[in-house]
Amino acid sequence: MIGEHVLVGYARDTGGREALELARAIVGLTDGKLTVASVYPPDRPAAAGEAHALLDQALDLLDGATAEAAVHESRSVGRGLSVLASRIGADIIVVGSTGGGARGRITVGSTADHLLHASTEAVMLPPAGYTPPEELSRITVAYVRRPQCDEAVIRAALAALALDVPLRLLTLNVDDARPDPLRDDLALAIRLARDSSGLPAEAVTAELAEGDDVADALDDVDWPEGELLVCASSEDAGAHRVFLGEMALKVLRAAPCPVTVLPRGYS
Image (tube, rainbow, N blue to C red; front, side, top):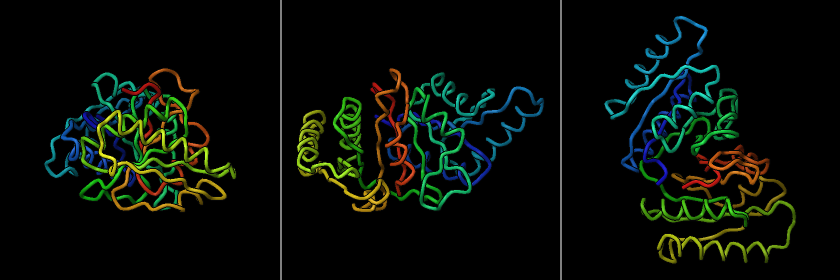
């Protein structure tokens, strides 16, 4: 299940603290393991010591919550986190929104951009200013009918069953497409979610959100506190890698809740 071992990339800024809080909330739900990481460059003699000091600060912010600390040398923070996640067996990497973006929306910085186009593990980002609630209220999957999204439906359905929360399948119609075929696809996805997980019928719903653009369509549906949005990687992704396509990137940037992007072939 997503979140059995969470790796959070910590930075000394608001986004880093928000990522840390979200990572702690995830392991609180899943009973998983938490590793807090700092990546430092190889060409600065004092960088390793600074990274260790930064992690001491992060562990203090956790107020006694159990976590391990890990430092890693790399010229790229994103690449360093991806390599470290593979090395320690983490199944998801959490990073924060970069500074300067709108509150309540995700802003993709260089670290997140690398992970969203190359990570071998799932990637999660919270919107700027996000404070995790005490409970997860629902998992939503951004759905279009293709194999990668079907994989995401199965994984999200199993997670919803394990966490005892409902599952919503959401399709965006921003191209004035005929709605009936899209609703037919959603009906098939509902059946897939139920058959693959054993979720009861009332626990799986579907919505078709319409609007002039992605942000408008997302505003067309409700987003209760405690929502988590799951996106599949693009068909262009290599096997077992994250690669966020153009439409999914628009969804991520407009989402009002944390977003998880699964690698292609995630299991």
